Length: 354
Image (cartoon, rainbow, N blue to C red):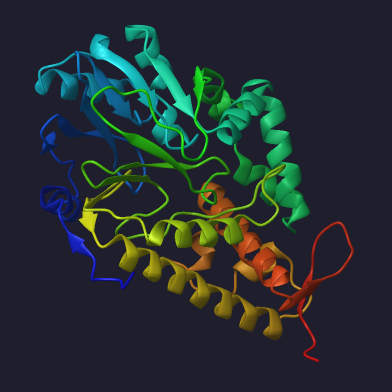
């Protein structure tokens, strides 16, 4: 399919973004609303989508961050469109990150709704709800050290057990959705599309009847989602992500409804832009490896172009940057453009051309 230009359709959302505010609740189509749920950090809000169900009740695609102000915003949004949290019958979770699944437990408690996600992300939730916050911190410290971080920097960036306590409240799903499964939301025909990369079990949802494509964080209109490695995670998440981009590029989509930012048209064009972005990043990283042979992921991240000077990166931002660098290094290794030595901490050099 020939890629057409990306066209903004969520004009109110983009205007709010430019004004550094949060948009209003918006009726997208008959029986479909976008409810912005505020969150901290640069993304500012999550798009929770509310679907009116045949026979009564509501469905949700994503819920928002688990915080009192986010909960109040979600409840107020449901009231504004003439509903109530008690009307929710089912929650589709695109992926396990807390800005998308965080309020699912509160919604289920208030309404009795089922919660559904992909088995891979369900396993991820089980893994961290089965550990103490202290164990979570120690695992991340060990993983960062394995990427070349000095232990004191790894511990400073990983944060405290108290900051992990919210992970224990995350809802374990009642239902699992594999690629191609249909969601049980009467009046809609949402098909689950497995798009690993941002998380191992990331799901998009396609509705062929309306041409709507709920893209979660897989395809966003302005930014590239973070593709990172983590302890016990996928061996080559960037390869998975680029493959999943290719699989949705031919999806017939009249409009894309992302988890952040604004709605748009031009899914094929946007996936092409994202693939080009990562190829540029891979080329930049390969050049850094050639200039700094034997570098670890931690060291090589400092030689890449970021949105601000590397000296300003710390804590979660630095973790994202280093683990994203590691994901790109793994794909370069898969392509046999770099080689790593056999030590516990990987050190990379450019492959010798034959």
